[in-house]
Structure formats: C-alpha cells, structure tokens
Amino acid sequence: MKKLFLGLAVAAGMMTFAQETKTVSTEPIKKETQPIRFGIKAGGNSSYFSEQKLSLNNQKIGFHAGVLVNIPLSQKFSLQPEVLYNQLGAKSVISSTDVTTGDTNIKTKSDYKTTMNYISVPLMVQMRPTEKFYVEAGPEFSYFINGKNSGNSTISTTTGGITTTQSVSNSEDINKDNVNKFNLGLGLGLGYDITQNIGINARYINSLTDMRNQKPEGTEPLNHRTFQLGLNYKF
Image (cartoon, rainbow, N blue to C red; front, side, top):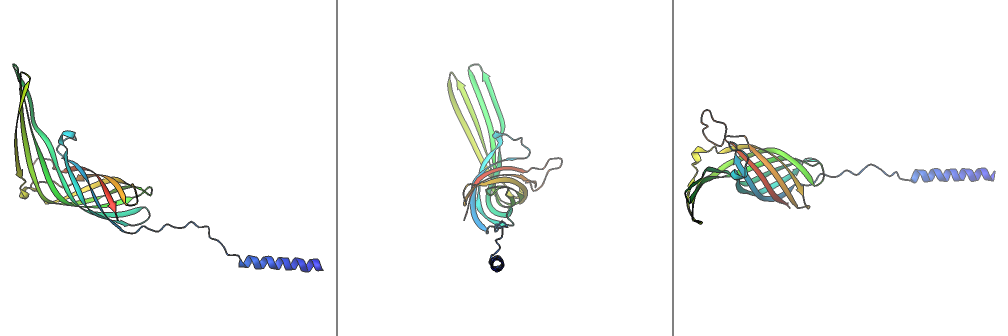
C-alpha cells in the first residue's frame, strides 16, 4: 500500500512539473529591415559617344558628385535615388600625320574634346545576394546645364636631332539650342560596402536619348556611354 501511495505521489509531482515548464520556441529570429539612410558620393567618369569605337584614345575623363538616399524595401531589395552633378563628353583625334622630307620630320596632331555638364537623377533598384555585396539597375534622368568644345593642334618638327614644337588651342561654348536638354539613360552596376558607412560602386550608363536637339536625316542616334567608379558614405 505504501508503495502504491508513493508511486501516485511521484506521478502527481511529475505532472505538476510538466504543466509549469514553459515551452521554448526554436523558430529563427527574423531580421528587421534596415532603416532609411542618407549619404554622399563622388568619383570619376570615363565617357565617349556612341558613334565612336570604345578606345582609350576617345575617353573623356570627368567626375560625378552628389547625394543619395537608400530606402530598404525588404531584406534583399532597396531603392536608391541620387542627385548628381555629372560631367560627360568625349575625346577624339581628328587627324594625325607623320611626314619625313630629307633630314626633316614633321608630325602633326589635331584633337578635340567635348565636355557636357548635367544634373542627373539615377533611380537604382539594388539587390543584395550577400550582406555587403549588391547589384543594381534602373533609369537615369539628366538635364543639360552647359558644355564646351575645345581643340588642340600640335606640330613637331625635327631636324638634325633638334625638335621644335608649336601648339595652337581653341575653345568655344556649346550652343544650348543645339542640345536636347533632357536625357534618359539606363544604368547597370555593382557595389560593395567596405564598412558600415563606406562603400565602393561601379556603374555603366547607356544613354537612350539623342543628345542633339535635331537629328539629321539618315544618321544614327548620338548617345552618351559612361563608366563610373566612386566612393559613397552613408550616415
């Protein structure tokens, strides 16, 4: 009888302990969406015109600088509008000659450079395969501010091992009436967050709008092609 009462007491104690024990959830903790962050960015541009073949000789070196805001849409996706001062254009060699007559060698080279300044508003959608690395794509809307065409001609004459060089330069502002004020482009890029605040970004922008206000009949569209490399800082 004592064994029976002892067994009932042990069973009752175990049932009471089981009722008081709390269940611990094993579900993974969901990561919260990151907050909206503001920042600044700046870097270099390398641009040319669509009628040119891609070459180091025709790359116009410029820069971009401005502000950004990164708006997380989910853990993987975010929207990043930017407002940038954007310097585009192209560089090209018009002519180059090398003529030797007797003991005299004459080399001539004429080139020009076009600089076009825009206010650009990229609207990038970013996707993060990993926490620090992202790829991006989206439209870029630009407004033409001003520009300049500059040229340079160089004549080098070598006689008896002695070389003399003459240079002639000229520059003129671009007539705004000849330029399409609004420009639409498509950007593709990738980036990496070096730290929580500092990141690096590379982007290619293909203009879809003819930069000329009036396109001559029988000609192909004249567009910008731009490579960008820069740093950004998010607050």
